[in-house]
Image (cartoon, rainbow, N blue to C red):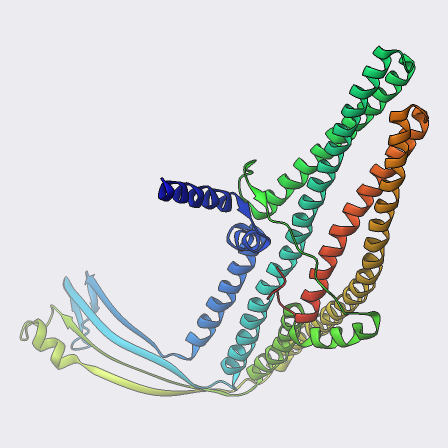
Length: 436
């Protein structure tokens, strides 16, 4: 019996664990299912494939060809080069190759450009996941906050129900008037309306979180709470955080690599103005039915031939064609530099705002908690007077409304602070390690 109880306890704990998602598990689902992140994965794969395609231009081109023809009437005998007037067949085959020797380092610069673009796409993939993770974390915290608000209003409803029961007994005993009961019931109705609104907000937040992860909503799933963390960050070290983030953030690295790629694009375009050298050659043989003295294979052996060529190409007016392309590439480089500057600016501003928000939200959280404590004590006094029949319904409703508002503010301040702590830790580290 003891072992059976232990197994049941383990099973229940396992089932509960399966129905609870932590923030880290939600991020794993996001990386697996989010279509925006999957698109960035495909873009990275495309950049890798484009780089392989560029590298293939340095490989020799080898091809085998064969043909079969039937000649009718007066034609030239391929075997004797004499005119003949008969029907005869002609079969040829050959193996050809061509390989570049020197192209002004055009392909090499294209490979360097493709390498930078591939690395930029990989960094952008990480940047997209980070951006989606921030949105996911905001949605996760919103679910916890709206759930706490719903639970708070549920407590308010239960408190009002208890008060209605107490006042009903007092009305029945004739110690208070019926008008007080109607006023307390009105308060209960207001609390129930706020409860329904809070429940709808909670359900909406859950749906948004499931949609962010691109998984089917499940009412049985609960989300693990977040713990408050100590923070020593202040406004004075925001610049230090930004300087470290410049080196670590994938958005910055991606933009910088993308900008550098245009340097090699310009070099690859200018390479078209240089002479190019290539090597080509081939070997072939043929068979003609007009030569009846040799069979097929002996005739192929007798007609085999080969060639080897070095080809030199010197562009004379190529700059007229390449100059506009170079100018366009340089404009693209300046645009990329501007995008890099914008990314740096946004990162700096976000960090400055995050540092400032953390301090203000920490103060707001402490203030809100103190407000709740004070109004809770004040409401307890009013409630005791109400029960004793020495306080009116207006005082009771006002104290209850003030307490409910303070509790809502405290809940929102708490979860805003939790979110801001993790966001600033992410900015400080440049990654999500230990943030969740």
